[in-house]
Image (cartoon, rainbow, N blue to C red; front, side, top):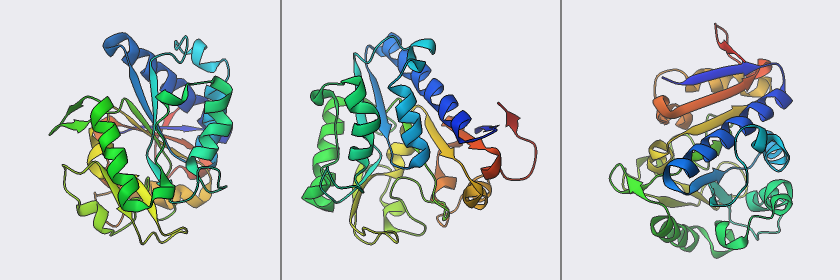
Length: 248
């Protein structure tokens, strides 16, 4: 069952998300000796990353960033220093302040283009992340936002990537309805195989998408296709749909 929590404002959402991420990474390190975290772009995740770079993780039980490997849920096909790059956001808010070594940060090489970038990323994931569920790599935590249209990562409503099959790991995107059109994304299968997806939403513009996500699964709302028994949805009051929710 989906864990759904609503909080007063975006800052509270970022704090709750950072705490849950830290707890899950600490648990993964204890159980398996290594933890794998995938990041997304966006304003709310960006504030979450800033908090992860501070003292909050230690309070949540994550003593250091040793043995944590960083991945990405999706990327625009731009240079890593481009303002639209998800890697650039993560680097400035989280990776640079924490000093996680480059060899443990696995960025999607958007500058290579959708196909070549996706092929290289799939190879890296298969080499470094152990699998189950049909031998798909299993990430410990994936941070996701949600678009007003219900998209997650770069999986858009009705897109062919949603039909890629459960064996697909990483996909090239050529026709994103949001610029830029060329992107790289983890597959729906990898999102569903993760031990936990954390979906963050703030602001009234996301309320309809959240409500649709919690309805019947449909290709018209990609977020509704996530594995609900492994999904944590953390919202502010403005993004929360009507009805009783778990109050944080």
